[in-house]
Structures are given as structure tokens and as C-alpha cells.
Amino acid sequence: MESDTVLVTGGAGFIGHHLTSALLSQGRKVRVLDDFSSGTQLPAHPLLTVIQGDMSESSVREEALHQIKSVINLAAIASVPLCESKPELSSQVNNLAAQELFKDAFRLGVSTIIQASTSALYGVPNELPLTEKSPTQPIGKYGLDKQKAEQSLLSYHQHPVCALRLFNVFGKGQKRGSPYSGVLTIFSDNISKKIPLKIFGDGTQSRDFIHINDVVSAFILCLEDLENNGIFSKVSGKKFNVCSGNSVTLLEIIESFSLFSNSEIEIIFESPREGDILHSLGSFEFLNNQIDWEPSENFIERIRELL
Image 1 (cartoon, one colour):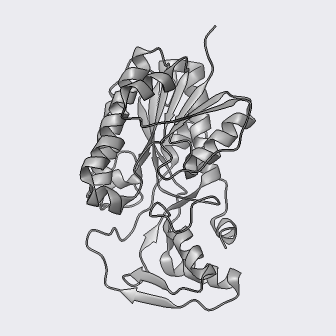
Image 2: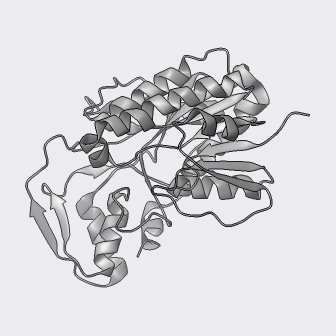
Image 3: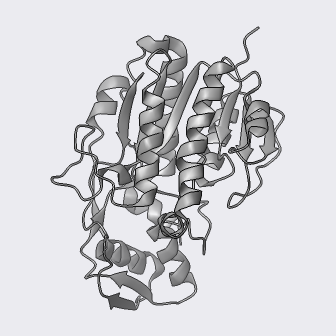
């Protein structure tokens, strides 16, 4: 009898926690592989097994992939500064280990793989909004390694696979004070501690923020379509933006936080950082056309939860 267990690598991280919880709530058996270098323990559940280990090690991959139906690869060094300061580590985790995972998975009979990719592949955009046809020109080590992993997975044309290019994911559960935290979590943490907010530039730079609930729904819809339809799935062999389709500036974010916290927020403006992207905005039309996915969460209401 074929196993219906889903392996979630990096399942102890921010996205992994939410995705694992959603899969378990659907009655799916889930196996999590994580080295817990940045993740946190998951609540015990009768359908959940957890393996603590390094995905770079072949014996760990072998154990994790035993009798697995589908894989969602979230394992990554997600801190851009850390990837730049430790390029060998970035290559090992974000690219090489991912490629070994894909190879071993299909050798061991896994049917479906989804790769968590990133909007960092686009680099400095030539025009907005970004679509899946926009040129990829990553400017940092993180984006370059994630691009190689994405290309590797999508080369397996004979298997049902896809890659989801995540934009700026936010929501409850991101670790405060962590190098992996997004700007919204950093801002909310500093506000709670009454620490001035530091902005590099004039604050008009904008980002496309996507709530964790919408990210989870995209993963699950793609997983279901791939498992049900195999290589004939509408998402198989493709990459998709997972974004809100709206952009918001840092100053607008701070204004909302100030309103919700009923306090004035001190801002320290510093010189722009070299390599920082000024504006990012994605289009989710392609994914919407394939499986009718669209974001449903209200950005302003959801950032209130972060305070």
C-alpha cells in the first residue's frame, strides 16, 4: 500500500510550522526533517514524526525519505546577510543539499516535490509587476543558490514537481530578534521594546507582503493538484509567484503600526545600503489561472496581530 506521508524539510521553521499544522489538520501524515539550527519544536501529534538531522548527510536523507509520497522542501538558510558572510554554507544548504534531496527522493520512489523558491531570483526588477516571465538576475548569494535549486528540480520533467517563488512572507510565529526575521517582525519587536526603527533610505521603498495563511494555501493547493494529476497537473514543471499583488512602503507600515499601538514611533534614517532593492511587486495571475489561487488576507488587519 502506497504511503501518503508528506515530508516537510525545514518543517520547524516559521513557514514549516504553519504548513505542517495545516497538513495535520487535513488528516495527512507528516514527517518533518530539520536540524533545529533556527527552528523550534513542534507540538506533539499522533500523525507527526520529527527527525532532527542535517539534510546534507545522505544517511539522514535516506531515513527521512523512507516510504514518503510527497516532499515539500522548505529547508534553507533564509538569512540573506548570513548567506553573504558564509557563502559555502549557503551553497551547501540552499543548493547542493536540495539537489541531493531531489535525486534521492525520486530514486526512493517519491512521486511529488514542491520547492520553496524566492522572489530574490528576480534581483533588481526592470519593470513591475514581476511575472514568471520576468528575467531572473539574482544579485546575492542567497538568490543565486535558490535559483540553482529551482532549476534543478524543474529539470525533472518526468515527475510532478513545481516551485513557488515566495515574496515577503509575514505572520504570527516569526521569531523576534532572529536574523531570519522579516522587516515587519523586526519593526514590531522594536516597537514593543520602544527602540527607534532604523530605515536605510527615505522609507519610500516598497515590498509585496504575503501572509503566511495565503502561502500555506498555495502550497496545499499545488500539492493536491500534483498528487491528483501527476505530470498532467496544471502546475507540474512550472514556477509560480506567491504574492499579494500589492505593495506597501516602509513609511506606510510604520504609520499603521503607530496607529495600532497608539504611540509615536521614532525613526532613524540612515544611508541606503548597496544592493538593496527599492521596489518589489509581484503578479499572482499565473497561479490563479492554473488552480484558482489568490490571496485572501488583509494586510493592514494582519499586521495588527504582530504587535
